[in-house]
Length: 246
Length: 214
Image 1 (cartoon, chains in turn purple, orange):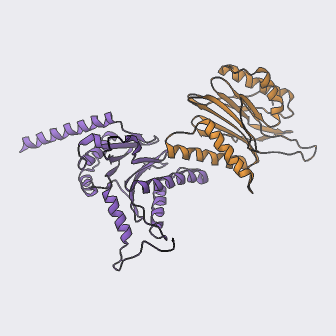
Image 2 (image 1 turned 90 degrees about the vertical axis):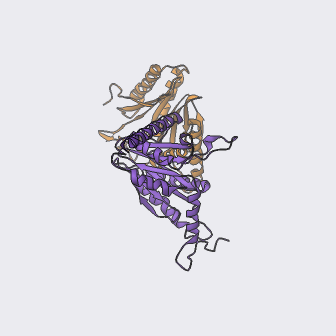
Image 3 (image 1 turned 135 degrees about the vertical axis):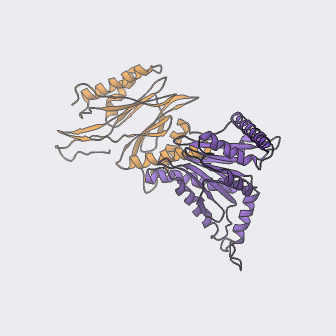
């Protein structure tokens, strides 16, 4: 029967279903997003797959359109639905308005969809938070985050999912103009952020970048390994310096 | 775009027509740009060819408005398929998708009155040309044409087409068709835009302007 509301207020003003959905998000594997100057980076923690499982069927970074893509944390099945609706909206927008969506528009669309599910009969909220990145027509890079309640905000860098707090704190300390000065540095910052919380390094990280006027590019494992090694070397050099100065 | 009808002897009938030729290496299609009406020329720089994907072109003519609406709708749905699945529809699949849409709308209150030519290059099957009319008949063909111009050009194509035409030979065949139109067709069609599809994608060839056309 779809006539009964499931998400209702508690006496102290909470929407418990929404908060429980946010808990589901916290159980999902970590995703991090970084807005650089000419690049936007999405990194996700790859959940280790079972021996017999084909790896490539688990994709946490998805394109919504040629210039926008997103990563999510939380219930994968819910994410599939949201992503599909977003993809349809991207094309629908192009058809009616003859322009590609702005990152903010599609974020707003997804957020509105999520909010609707917190106020509909017989439905529960989506158990995902999304990091939506891309470039607008005018070339500005954007990063937005949505959560199960249906709110969205723009960020310079953010993380969602397991240990998101740790990653965010790392980013707050290390996101500087120098850190994002070049594309490569932005990518390394994303990897460094993920390495804080991901065990066993590069093998468990999946990274994707969008550059202005270029489609989404997933980094190959070789590239990742090279970058991880670079980071490890830099770390060693830093530690040696610190030892010398003390 | 669209049909201009005979109202009295002072006006003239025409329609958009376009011809495509299929060769071993690729596809060529063209569409006339200008429609002259007595001493008046109606400049029509609307491109009738719609890029469905990197290797598929849809040439759409017919009822004014229906053409653009239907073609853009198909175009966006082909793109949506690409977003959802990570790869593009093959030309054969795109043609059948288009046909199904046209057929569904045919028995609705709002049918689309459009004639189509769909051309594409498939990695495995090579180049393919699909003829579709407003009743949603679909046929894969080595060469095709729509409109009054078809009455003249189909016979030329029939006589001179060979499955192993090279790119240049195909362009020449197209030129032959245009010459025939220039000679025998009631309307003066001074310029044709030509596009070619091969394994590298869609290429714009130079506009063909038949000699003697004003």
